[in-house]
Image: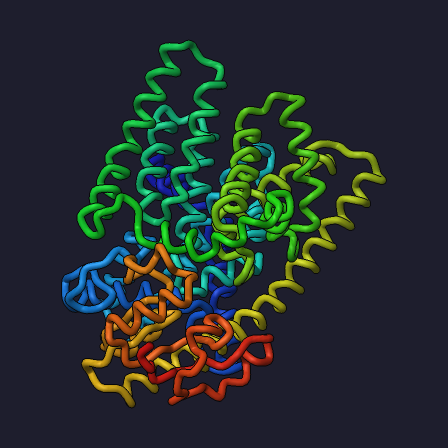
Length: 502
């Protein structure tokens, strides 16, 4: 039986099997974490910030306005593109779109795994198996699955990062322009995308081409990035009077005291975050690839390594926090994992005839990596479930109490604001400064915060007591959650105080 040439072309254009394996793994992984949460307490989100996105998205879908508090335009969303995506999901259903949000996270995890596999296969062109080596690693790595089920923009940004590195790697005529365009769009997901201009320019300057070609590539790539970047800066300026979102300023102000710690300690803590899990087995490969890239002048991999180290350094300098499993560094972790994976396999002779001892070591390493990957997937699922339970029994429970027990015109000072914004329609003073940017200059000065609350005639204060020990002193407790998960994790119960003016 002969196949018509047209039919043969259609067959050849079908997506390879590894793409669908990645899809299945991504969906199963995110669904598995959600299942863990349902077994422990209930489904939800492991971060209060996810409710901030949901609130902006709902207001955009229902009211057609960019606001956290209805009627008040604000720049408290770090990721406008993710907010728009969630707003589209809100148009599909009137209920809280848990399932659709999880699905969006799983799709982002799928895209991330596919870009990783494309980079892997371009690095090892002789590898033709349908088994997605890099795809499996990323689709099951617990940090990434946690992010995929978090309701946050984290994995959308991570997928865009790998897309930029893929475009820099392939030999497409328009690869640099596509990389530049992806960087410009990426800023709409997280401002951190601007750091990707570093590897783009690094590759352009050191690529083997004449000066005219280099100049043309630079102009086209930077031009592709400029339009969406300019639109993003104008968007923020029109909303808040600043070119960056309020979170850019608020987070740095809130954690400014942490910059007093030695930069070496801060950098070490930040850079070690991906080592909690299978990443520890990739660390020797990372160093090996670093050495090989310098020795062989592999411009592409040097760009990836320098970017990873630079990205970690930026956070060590500006926002040296490691809580919530390194949530701010998670988008960059796939780059570390890929570098470590490629370096490990190259060191073990992957793709070429190796000595018997090397083959034995390679199989032992692969077996150990698989066991650690699965073990941390299970532990990560349990961790995710407890994180969700804390948010549900503290932030969400307190927000529901406020909705049922306060007057519609009451003014409530809150840290954190996500669940309160979503489950109540009260006026809010945001002690974290995201939607109340005027208090950013004194965000950690509790005396001035108390004066501000009194000047604004606040009615209630909602926070964990140890977050503001002086601010809460002498205030009347009217509600305290009875959640068991936060105290078990070493935290406190969310408390609502009737604000007594000072």
